Length: 308
Image 1 (cartoon, rainbow, N blue to C red):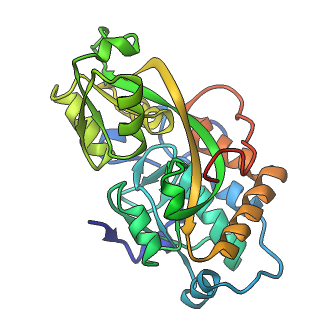
Image 2: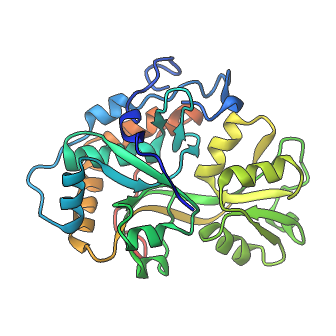
């Protein structure tokens, strides 16, 4: 069941000031304390760079957002690099969190967001009953999901990966998962594992923290999820290690209500704007770029995958 955090919108841009890798510098819980690679992610410069829309069409969703005064989204608060709450300050930082803030700024002129958390299988229902305006959080665009929601995107394309305990060096290729218990979240990750490794034994957990705990405790031999999710966990947790295994494709999109297609077109325009003006790249460099070496990837073409 999802949990409402009504004060989260003001915390989103109360960002920390500890520097890491120049001006781009959050923490998960006590597990992240003192981690030299993940002290504080500060995306405020990217948010400041983001555009504000001119005249927008009236749609039921936009009218509701403007009347409320903030964007309400379904997302995560426990995904380092993408959407992570600092338990001390309440700040939520990361690439997905930044996309939500930028969208709020585009629609309202201010990056105010309320994040509603819940299991990965609740997003379609929340969009369908208008409990949230959008779903942003490593939300893979799938054609079966697109029958229930409208997707704007992709705004990033990840792959499926495999994470194991740090001292486990037995899992080197996909076939090493045959007959083994593998943690997955229901939805895209489960489907991908069943397709690529039909002899693996999926063990379902709703929350990413539950998957990580299952690996640490030895209840499963590995955790399979998109590489974006696994990257952040492996960086902050020395008990976990991301393998070199990568397969499939996970194009992330912004889920919007199915009954408001004009709102989807506004979100598509927003994505095209931030990709063209450099905001997307700046946000990446200040979030995921803090955790992984190398230049920012090129943003994908919006509308380039089935279901988008």
